[in-house]
Length: 341
Image 1 (cartoon, rainbow, N blue to C red):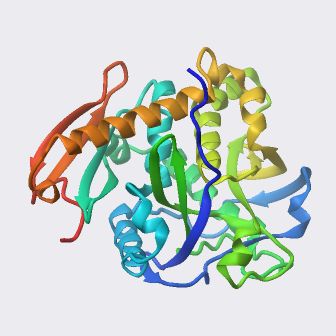
Image 2: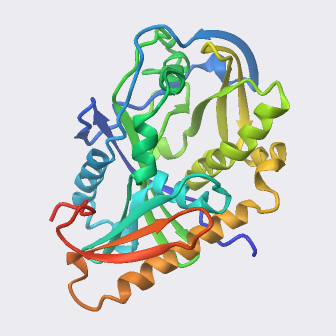
């Protein structure tokens, strides 16, 4: 199928979540700036991501929903809120988009209705819980390295040299976008890594004109095994994550197995499909968007099928590799309730 219409996402707001308890702040105090030296297309570096303590972060998606709902409460008179049909997070949309390519992991995404808006929220599967309880020490280090990497390339002020000492901030900057996929009007929040700007950004209008950049770490792609693994398990997720918010480039830190980053490269998002064709064949980016479009259609129809008391129900959508998406409807309150009433 052809690539479905997707409007250029429009930044409509932002907020900060402070600390591990994700306390909501209606400001952009957690916005980070990419150090100018690292805006080059490719540069040799030496970052030891083992410095400092091992960093483990819980997903805290429930606290993230609380913050998003608090932001929305002050925006209900805005046109973008009145028009939207779905409210969610970028990570939810990305998870759905990657379903056609997913070979290993299933998912559970729940929908609840509030003030005629459909909220989408992810839950851990039993496989997720088992995997998290059996994470290896190396996997923990890889996760920690990813968080620490940002401290080597981003700073709190433009042109300010990053600390790069292994310290990790638990503050989070979230941008909120409106977009339209076919007939589906979306409003979603996305944690953003940082921007490229030599001037301090203090307003939403200034932020709209800034260039956002994603930061990722990756094992050095110096052998066929690593390239195939990256192509199959990462490139599509990176593409979807960036495409949804209109990010044009990803700053990749190539590391070895000991957590030492030796090279930075800025990869253009549009080049991901050309550089790693082993991920996409025989599918294409259009398959990602079409699957998301079909899923949103399914959600709408499932919600519409309940003619009364929709706000008292939770629609539980689940998927496993090799099977179609399933839906079951539960009465609130239940295990899958996620909105404060």
